[in-house]
Image (cartoon, rainbow, N blue to C red):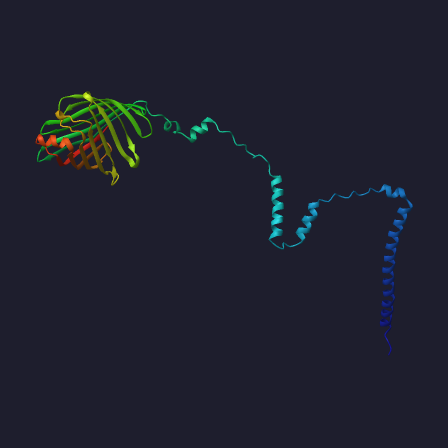
Length: 336
């Protein structure tokens, strides 16, 4: 087959170029290697040339940087690894935090205290050294078969929490005639949080002739909130008598209060002019229900039973009086 002259010339050109390119690449690689080797040989042969070039100083590696790169390159495997990283970060943050706040806290002054407790001094004020109190515990009346009657029982004191002057009075009238009346003037001294010791004189106008007595007793709040008053009286001629009174307040509501009361009288010897016999001479029990419109004003209704005992009962029968007496009463309780 005959080839055209053009194709024959192209084939010869390609065959010529391919060996030349390969030879040039091989020569370039050999020349680079030789150049590097020559430079090394030149350095070995010329020591001053090596000293002339500055020697690079290796950088001190941060020990944490390697760990940080290593930890960053690996995934978090479990909670323990995460906790270790968080703890390390927390230590780093704590070390970087300052010891003192950026804005110092100012000290507390008198103006700050006054603004925080504006009424503190008013609440800490002490009570007055002198006080007083007047209470009409019973101011009542009744209408019975024996006639109409009235009775009272009042207490007042003046002084301080430790030392007081006490005034006590009680009495009873029937059909306009005073059956019994007395007044006591006592000095009281507080001996505990709930009890006072009292001592003084008692003046009695009824029954019988007027007489004076020396008085000594205690009064206060017994356990279970019983108000107790016990007083002994010593008169002329060796007469000794005693009175014991106890009452209790039962709150049915905040305003409705039931008050039971028990009073006992004792005598050491007979006193016929006064109608009093030895031993337990008289007992009185009462039950009063009051409604407190205010603490200072409280009307009430109630029932009272009185009974004489022993020689006292005999003396009453001899005078035509009743030994037992039950009556319904109505009254008011006041204090100021």
